[in-house]
Length: 188
Image (cartoon, rainbow, N blue to C red; front, top):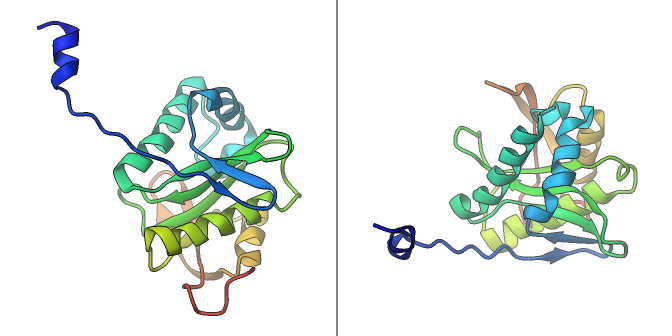
């Protein structure tokens, strides 16, 4: 059997990752153009709260996991671009791998993009997408103790502390529960 014949009979999976926009940001599909930015993030101490630092191979595998999550769950995380400049500011979106306690909205901002409200703006857009488009009934954010910046984002979004878990690789995490749609508690 030739490679062409094997490829011709293999099933094909196509996933369309939507683009979501906010007043300042574009949430777009991750792809090969993001390898360098993801590698730089995971090589830095900024990644310590999300399983890093990782070498270039580990970062590449993480990007593949981010892309594959869309195929396996029908939702996932986007790359966040500053619309006016095209700069890649981070990754934000929905996360729910096997073994996760429930669907999460999470955010990772890249170096030089903190302190501008990007995490909150993008995470609110992702949360709105989760509730309105995906139909998820609830969302959490898992925040490591000491990650005060992420705890502040969760609080600005209207989430409240709702327990703790110990993850086998990430360790002790605080659970922040986001208000359900229509509860009147969500940040605008």
